[in-house]
Image (cartoon, rainbow, N blue to C red; front, side, top):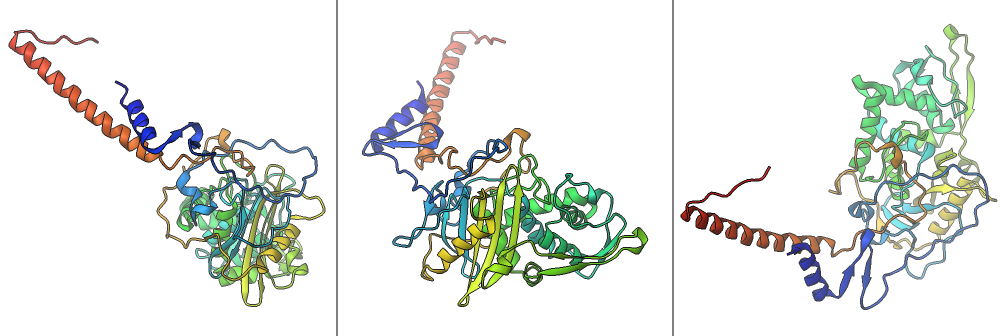
Length: 418
């Protein structure tokens, strides 16, 4: 007898719900709920890099912060104004102080981060590195993708750690990211730094985040979500050094006489600082695969909000402008508006994602097209199946023992087949 099939039949008769593939379910009393579409601005038709298949969804990761966040669509408090239309495939607006999530679009949908990944590097390495320490840049630090963002540090140059942070957060220097990961990675260098970043993500409860590069340059298995980015950003803004760095508009990079390199000035590429009243700072990002990504924070009337968005395209608004529109929407909501919460570090017990991902499992865009979570009756069905299977095994073993005894009594031993 097929005991698993029997368990399913028993559960169906008892509940009236028929389990189907991909974790979806069809209720015999009515149709399954459909996600509310997010307000979307029509993206331009441009040649894009194909978005790879995201990692498989994990049900317990998608409900971190609240069950309502486990949707590929829109989640907002009841009876609030409709959020502005943006091209971002996923976004979250949250309160930095209370941790309340005010709303989001596909908060737990996988997407590639681009340079907003540098916030995870900051959350990991700021407590580990002394900002006053002077360090030497190596040739390995400068091994970055040609044409990608760089501050202009030179091999053999000596810079304060604080200068490196400014170069990372103002100009998104990829060589700086390599250096900070190496310096904070201990004996294992950059590999140790990446390992520490992924451990930090799990500690924060950002279970959908995996770093393959310290800079956010695309790499195998690198992914995040809008919710995870909000967790990471909140951890960053808890650090007074970070708050000062991201609010800095200009910084000087010192000359390196031994390398015959002149000093120069860099400015902050986050336009929110210059054009949005109360802006606290944030981080921009872009790769062909990730499209535009953005994290920004601002304060208004004593209230600090953060916005995270992924997979945006530019029509008439850049990433920071789409973030500003969502911040305006958030500030207009009542202070008690909420659809979930940003969990505090160590507050969740969900199992961690794999430490490595196969190359073919590069994260895709948060389009809402991934398989839905498994049905909540899956675990009870499995338990019922195992229980009935155990009963069947017990009966079978009993019958086998009785058969052996009868054979023994008859003077015959059972034969085995190889």
